[in-house]
Image (cartoon, rainbow, N blue to C red):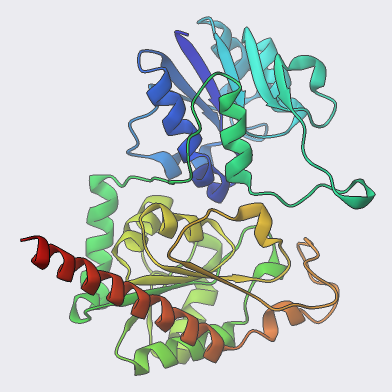
Length: 355
């Protein structure tokens, strides 16, 4: 194959979960031109990666060149040997078809079966409901339809020089170089308010960690500045709320952390991709959908009669998140760091013996 179009997922965290599959496609077709087709806001997630020769932005609400028919015309300018559909939408499949892709692979969802050359079917459980299976495995299965060997589960991200310079500026401004270890707190979640852990809980966690001698920095996206400021103010911690925020800055900051405590959102996967220990706070969502098999992770979720509900806004009392205490989260974070210390000590001992 000379040219392949990879239609990327529409969520930042899902793009990270697709990186093993993307990397495997690049390795299996080393001379092919790989084209990323994606929404503009997820493109920065893969900035610095060596996998794509070209990126085409596709957004029905974007400027004219990003609208459906213009993207289809852009794809048709050069023959597309195959299109890989990570999103399950009918729109993605139709765009690939009208864009001239000779082969289209993906899951048979939303009536798009007839548009696919090779297709997979989602597993269903009792009552016909979809089984919550890891998206990372689904993405791997899709690219294997093109003959790609099993990609594995090692997620991978990169930072740019600009990202690292922005992170260094924030580190200096916030005085974080004074700490041997800095722990990040990420209260955000674009999915909806049901994923949020209470601001007061995050503030109490920050106080607990600071009391143990850790530096604490609160991460945020542009719409979460006030929440980050509130947590930092209540806890006497630092935050990125006054920084020029970007996905690249968040990646570079996460890469520097000793550990990250986060809701089930994109930065959770940044941590895994950079090999940083991560404690993930789950409430309304099934852990099974976003399991990544990352060894340095702890998932915390309270069993409640009403969940996991997969709702964006809680119609009840949000007990799945409010009953998860700062003490429990602090203990899990310290447990991860102690485990990391033991592994580092064992590696050092092994190197000394080998020497």
